[in-house]
Length: 348
Image (tube, rainbow, N blue to C red):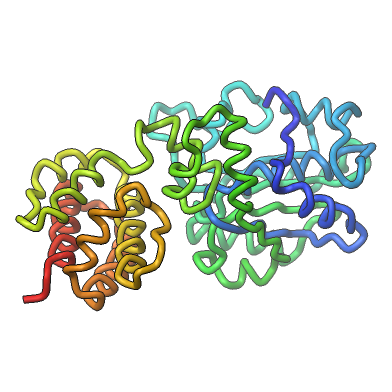
């Protein structure tokens, strides 16, 4: 880190209210909400605020010794627990305090390992350097495996003194129930559309409405998508939509070739968003994700059975659970596209 993390514009009210009640602060907070709204940034800004020695309305002042340490990535009373893959994305090699990459040449782990939690025991047993809080930010919580989740649960059952855990998750129901029960919840709301589009415009994004819609209202996800793609609707999905709307049968092979190197979660997410729009089109209400493709979506929905669309949408949700299993990637893509194409055809 080279600068002090700050709250995003839509987070200030929540941050002021929450950090202004530190006398009743819990030892573990589960910060949760829709993916792509800035939960990680909120947790890091909150950590800086909790460690600040001269907080202003509960938020980090930015100029005290603690804030300077935090901004340089060297605050001794702060730790980040995250997968190696996430650490490398964040430039952990530039941050000796919490670099977690193993350096063995292996593919960086996408999970939070149990040894990352066990290594904190010495830190817990050392007095805080500035006489205040000790803060650990753990993200994303869904990267905990069974062993590391139980190790964290053990820590939270007998929490170290003066220590606060900030645990970031998209969906608490995907976590170990006993782990969730040991935390106080802090839900972060989805920002209002006007706030999100204004922020996206300030970041230089053109046509923020379309990108925001395709991201389900999550501004950080919209910005990330816009920087990685040319259009809000992925090219493969646009082609698939055109095939389905044509009604002459979709040639799945070329599409499967396009997607077999894409992480399954990405294209499954696109299909789930499409099926939500198809259901909305069947109900004759405005689309949520891909309004720019309203004509083909409404054409497909007008011919297909709502029951079959609903069933296929539920089936797609189950496929996310096996997306990371060691399957043949191309066959998995092909079978999934075949199934959803079948659901979009007119009833026999």
